[in-house]
Figure (spheres, rainbow, N blue to C red):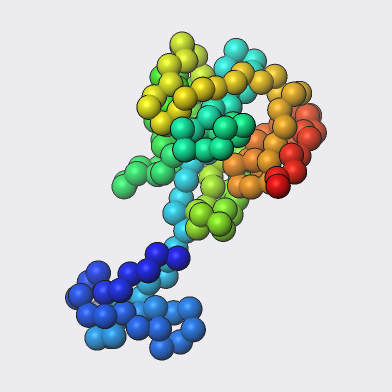
Length: 166
Ligand SMILES: [Zn+2]
């Protein structure tokens, strides 16, 4: 949980008078709900394969979906298409919703989309490698984005193997 010390509205100290409810001590009305952040996660289908990418900040062997924070005044489906362009330099079809998944550890809500994409893959600075996986060979992982991939694969009649995390 983010630890604000002062009210972002009036700068008075924040207090926790009731457990797990952090609010303004000057009673300006501010409560720090610490709402989860919406993140679009995209199952990118490219020439019949799924694009799994490795973020520079991740452990070496983990490849995941294309993800990004939904911008101010941006729709999550629009965010999905934008992230595919920014991170892979691919042009995506309009994004189709797969499902919405909690990702409590990061205080995020994962909004899973599928797109088909065309072009030539060029990674941006956040990513350092990618893999193209046939749907039948995808292994999924037990977290928000992995469930989105699982559910899309199931919609294609593929029941993926679930990886066990240490
Ligand atoms: Zn206040």
